[in-house]
Length: 335
Image (cartoon, rainbow, N blue to C red; front, side, top):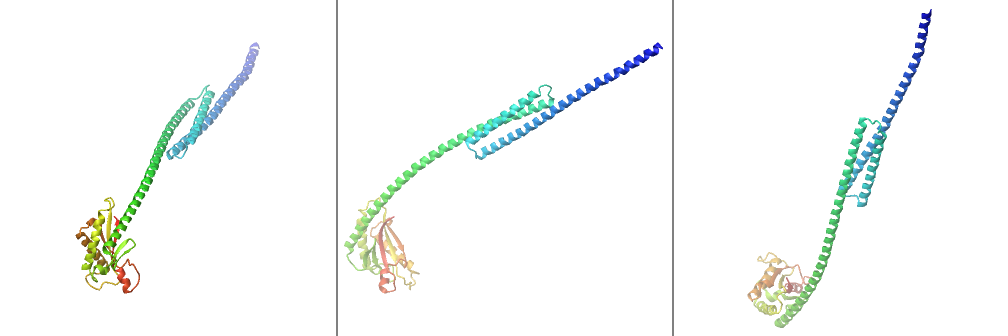
């Protein structure tokens, strides 16, 4: 009986020990689950922080790319560049603070991949800072180039102003010189025509019209011919004498010429020798020039021109008008 009672007491003690063991085991399991939940929650928040940091880095890269484009296109001002760089540096400083805070918060038992990610992000940030420094150097170089271009432009504008002033001064001097030459030539022309009047006299068919000395064609040529008649040779000899005398008085720096112009009336040519009045007027002017050269007038002081019937003195269809329009004009002018 005693042994039976002893066995029952041992069974009762085993029955009392088992529920206590189960309670302890349950508590340990709850603690482990709690720790796992805390670690998972920490991992979640850490992942969120890293995701936000990646977004900030992407924004930073976008700003750097934008700044590079602005620099390449030269569409930003110096103040804008300075503000953009300041904002970029502020963003980098903020990102550095975030990394430091995350590193401090996970200093207990950070996972290996978190440490590697932080190192990777630090490297990216260092590269961004290096790129910012490079942009600063490029902006400084751009400013130096702009300053050099402004100096060159200012120097060019200054030289241009000086050149314009010199050109204006030379233009004024040239105008004065030309005006003096014109006045001198006018004076010699007046002397020339006055001397011709004295030499030739008041013969009919010879007159001064404006700034030209005019011989009517009948004084020099037979009708329809370019051969100078005897009376015409006499008058042209007087003309040659006047030219040679005047040549001694005109200063050599005045480049004067005597232009001989031939003119006809409007009636068309009827003979076959000259196809039109152009040929007749030109041939008569050349005959006068050749005659003057034979009398000693330098060839470089003479020029011949034919105008046909296209520069009449008068309009009309009468014999008197036609006779006045048939002429040889002499004009003392400058080459």
